[in-house]
Image 1 (cartoon, one colour):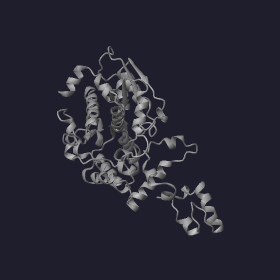
Image 2 (cartoon, rainbow, N blue to C red):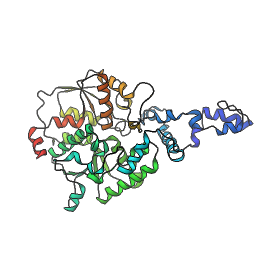
Image 3 (cartoon, rainbow, N blue to C red):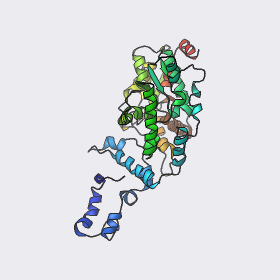
Image 4 (cartoon, helix red, strand yellow):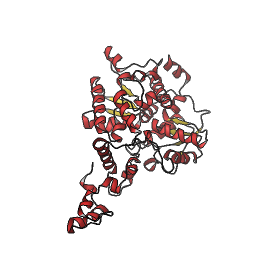
Length: 384
């Protein structure tokens, strides 16, 4: 959707002859009618340029006059999708799957909690039947429920919660995508349907505190759901684990023999969107006291995006160097023995980058680092 504030700067210079003197002169236009028919999108910005945005928020962070370019980009995408039905062909199956399956991928809702088989994790419905309430709701997310690599993160975090005797529950089959991918890809109508349905489910169980390992879920549930009356305390798992470590509630093995050199990659939706930079790093330090944290040149609020945000997870990069390849090269160049992330999207992109580079450096989520340091007795108890 085009807004008046966009008609500024160079665009106003092009329009001035038409507005003041009835003359042409805008990007090859020779008449006033041609000038006024020119649009920001297509005439000045191409579709490829618009869809190339990863919503990493670097432009907003760096802008010296605090312009929110992402708001403009999102509105233009909405106009394309909802008004003109113009969007990359890869997004059609994503929209259809969100509508039919409640997930960006064509997985069945019945398999959403399959990762928890044998872990004795209750659902909110089961606790409600017993008249009980958990301390936290563990929001697993679509990646954590269906992606084979991300499911390992889900299991690792659940093991930590069990080892710390945290009373938690999951929604199981009642959880579905909250719509964030649809909103980033311009399908606001679909987003609001999914978001409002999710809020209805959360409110039905009187949920107050949510913990999730996905920064996209973290941002959506905590920062955008209030627009529709969904107000919850939402905590990213790195922050939650760091609190547990600080309170000495996590049963860890001794640090002997656990020396590790790690390069940590900042997630855009955790960092630039929510200013969570220290918690993942402190989690790593507290879990492994004998650790060396190496920072790539671009880190914290100037960190380089993995390339998966803004719906790019489902779109192919066809021009230039792949973003995840460049970011992975930076992380590997630190000489670290392990790369740590705190986002399942980043996990996929950085892991693919490492594989493409021919390196064998492991990529671990911060929760996996902590879970690997749990005492054997606590691990056995969590599986009992």
